[in-house]
Length: 289
Length: 339
Image 1 (cartoon, rainbow over the protein chains, first blue to last red):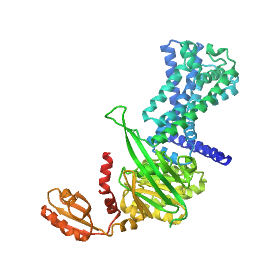
Image 2: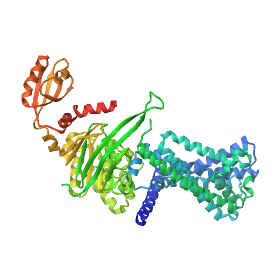
Image 3: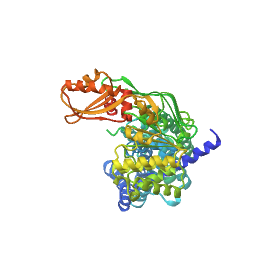
Image 4: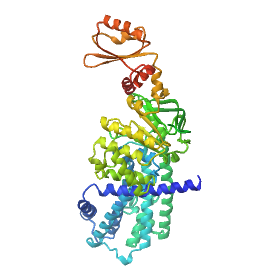
């Protein structure tokens, strides 16, 4: 590939990313009128937080003063991103192929489809950011979780957030590759992956309570280090004894390296899936039976 | 008028689909969608691919538009191998598929088109100017700000037609662009296709259709395709001239009996189709010469069929197809559907 060609591809990827982000935002925000959208954006995370509190206090009989509560609450608040980003990226394949019928036109145009899918996920990420922020505000303002603004490690929070979101986006791209080859029922694959991350990444309970094989699996996931770093940034402690010995820099390094590895693997898998879909004639298949 | 050089070249292009058999688990059967297709389309040409549904027209377009890889053979668009360098091809082509209603329902017509223009890096002002022009041409100027989910399927098809021309591609693939549209709209779009190419003589259009009058009216050259094979390729007039030694008749007869078997054995009948129409049967006959008509009429009368009308007519591309394949275009569709 020549320098000129490489530059053209980078420009096309950039265009694909921002146009897709614009499209994603139009789809996310235009399904109802602005007032209802605003109400929904606030009510949904607040309701999610209250359900969690109800489960924790009434079902699990835990007190809000228990040190585990902030762990659970913060993990759950950031888990909002998992579903939104994963599904935002991978669901766009099914949405465009089967619902809008536009995927084949994207493949005929000078569009970088991986960049396009990441762009589509960006809008969902924006909405999830709003939800996460509201959830954390409810936690601090109403439920008494101590996240003093002065005590928050801003740089660590920002770095961990960006790396974590990238890892989720590339995981979504990986699922998007699988979706290119399968019927729309692959939606359940995304839900299954999100469920597995909930179980294995220490979202609502520390990794330490898992059996050793599942702990090992959890330690291989970037989302585990993402949540650990976020909790350290907000609460001062990650809450996982099994990761407690790791310095914060190491946690961030592992998160960065695993994100880079995931990015490489997901682009590779997506390109392979694209090639296979191209050979099998699946890029415009309809499975809305 | 075609300019120098080929815009599209295929050499022994073959595509085989492997389809799982529902009745036998784990087994599959092969369907040959394209069978060693060799074609050249000159720059500036409006080239038609005519054939029944299932003939391989869409498969050909999908391969040329980089949506599908060939099983064997090569395809080049503007000299670029579509399998080797699809990225470069995509920058220079456009595609419109008829009979579908794609588009982002929550966006307006204008936004849908603007978005696609941005993928090609067309500056915003220029994109908006082209969108205004094209929407006026396809009759959607007053719907520019309408959300696409409010549009009828015909209107969506018109929007997609506009999308195909928006980027002024060097090679434009139109896959049955007027299918399902009302007569007036289809005519307006055909007129625009011809005018666009006249105004952009360095561009090329490959159009597939199973409407023989569309191919006849629009195309500089036509390839007749059936079951993945190119049976003939020439200018419509030249294809029809090939039948000039023969005589083409349309008859309407009333009567019982197996007219098909009778005509198949009649002397001088080269090809025929018989289509029942609420009682009477319409026969299209290609006879070796006019002299064969008298014994055919006598045979029909002998079989108890009463002649209701008789018309001698100029050959059409439908007759060319019948002559080449031995069945009408519509019969080919039924046949393809059963394959």
